[in-house]
Amino acid sequence: MRHGINYRMRIVGYGIGSITGYYMWLTSSSLKSHDNTKCAEKDPPSPPDWPFWFKAFSHCHDIPSCRRGYEVYRQICATCHAARFVCFRHMVNTIYPENRVKQLAASFDYEDGPNDRGEMFTRPGNLLDPFPSPYPNEEAARFANQGASPPDLSQQAAAHHGGCDYIMSLLTGYREAPAGVSLRSGLYYNTYFPGGAISMPPPLNDGAIEYEDGTPAVASQMAKDVTQFLTWAQDPQHDERKLIGLKMSTAALVWLFSISVWNRHVWTMIKTRRIDFTKTVY
Image (cartoon, rainbow, N blue to C red; front, side, top):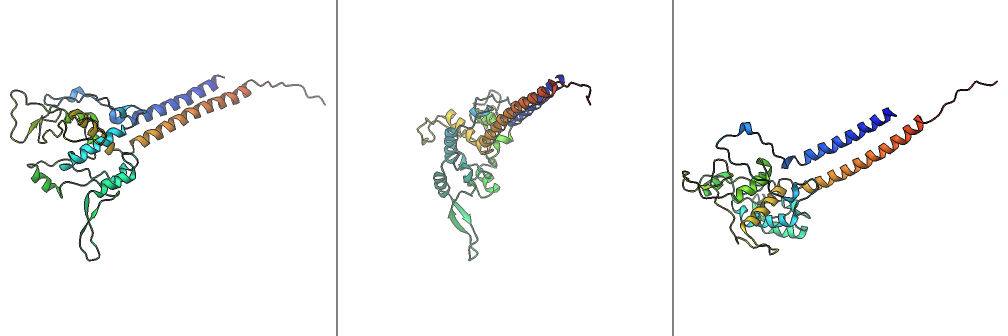
């Protein structure tokens, strides 16, 4: 009997360990490792832990917020930044219906070719095209922004420590330069940017855009929505992966229960049986 109990305990332990490991891997993007031994005096302050809905184990992206975030990106961020790793097809049936995404893609012109004459031509965008870039190359971007090249936004949520918390803090972290800090022309003080001096002016202002759903477009709301959208953009399969993980976890629990019942049934019959040895009668 003790052997059967130990066997069941090992099975339950393996299952719990597997589910815990999957949970840690799934939520690794939202975990922060603070190493105080590596902090320097000039390091920017750590961004606060903003309460985004998708951080929880079983929660998905806030799709209405992602939709508003795309409006902020398209009308404000896309004037300087590109997102070349995100295609319009990624938004189909996740952010917008397919017909709406086709309309959005067709509103941009793309250079394609060559045609039969060997000439390049311009065509409307389609679902397979990436988000358009505001500049033809990096040199043009630097020339238009006083030598600073606007970074690509498609992977910003994964490229920075803190991810969505860093982006949200950066967008809302513009302040007046403290006493004793002088900035040259074209730079702005931001609490959460390394060094404190950033060449991007405050991009969000109250009433800068009008949301399609009528949500008041205050700066904090726009910062939250575009952060939500950029977090979705760096991993469009986030919700699907979590759903698969929940299904696998549920199946693992059902399997553990079933194998425990089966193990108990089999070993109970074996260990409680009685064997009588009698003398053979000829």
